[in-house]
Image: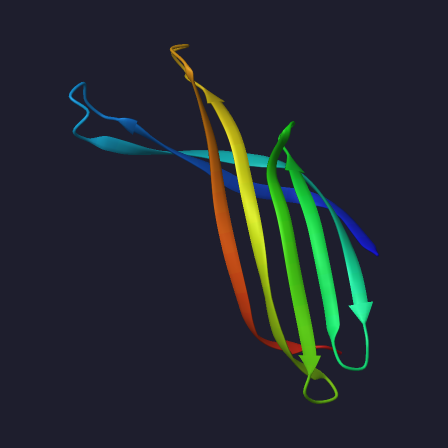
Length: 120
């Protein structure tokens, strides 16, 4: 088992209509900086090394949930083929600066990992 605590920077992305006719939209980016708490389970064998990670980012409430899996298959003493995947789920709520309402959004970000890893 491993654990970690760190800082995490991400952005929330929203669109809003730029005109009353709703024919044009503008992109809004909201930078978010918070604390990230992570735990990971490790499996090391002669055939494969695996790492499963779960994490949450707090700004100050939970805003990004993360799950990831990495599998290293050794091909030489210090070299492995790495495959894996991650998924981040952003669950954000924004209040309008004019007080006219709120926006709640859920954004999913899949990540695919294929490559080589130096395992020394």
